[in-house]
Image (cartoon, rainbow, N blue to C red; front, top):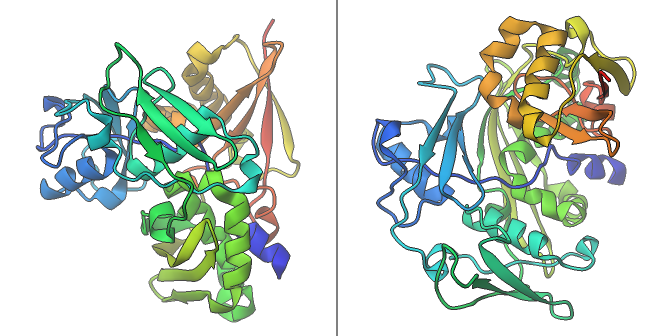
Length: 376
């Protein structure tokens, strides 16, 4: 059972991203909110006032927070657009009015804290995108407290802010509770409907989507494993087998990191197949798939790599349909010698089928990576 709970925290998690948007239907007018600085939460508040279903979109802030991209979920019904880039309007440059959550619990897996880890945590909790070019981060490695100070002559102002090593709640780590449509293997769904002993398998599948919508949790995998194991007896999964609509609740705590609280997720289960990032949509039978592309790529052309790869494997029509969001659906790690890259579809994707390596044991969706070679 402990192993199953470890699986539940092998989430589809990446570096936290954040964003901002406008207070009007015309998203070309710029990113301005009525609630203050355009953090993710403030922007979504304004979008909701204008009639957008904010459960169907994410907002990606660019580093430094001068621009943002509104990104709709690929399965969102009647979406007005897939992505839209906007400029942001700042009502203040004072970091004391922008950073409102100053907690940052430390977990042992972080080892020696770095400025980037601190900023990842602060950005994740506040819906911002500060970088080391914007602020200085001074860290006390004994107390694990930090201080953030605007760089002299930079874009931000204000007095230094103390970031305190103190616990947060599940509501702060997993603020997006409405996950929307999720996609699981049809065989797993059939197994669950016949035998509720498969509940943990379903939970593992759900958690990949929960992790994708709440990426701040990526900083606390060790803590979340502890929390899941501690809360296993109290997990509540309720699913209407006719509609697929359901909810998940996991109450737990980890002293010093997560206060007693409940992880919550609402969703609708579908078994509509997603596409495997493999030639002709074939279900991978090995964890490594060799692919050759007839160009060379760098970090500067990484989006071209994603597009060309999808085009080669799944066709240009499919590549074009989601061209503007492949940056969020496909992870790329370049080889040190520039000869190629390791590529993986994102677990928790709503259009590509893949599971985390450990979670795949239970989800019936394989884990696989593409070993991409560039032409010489």
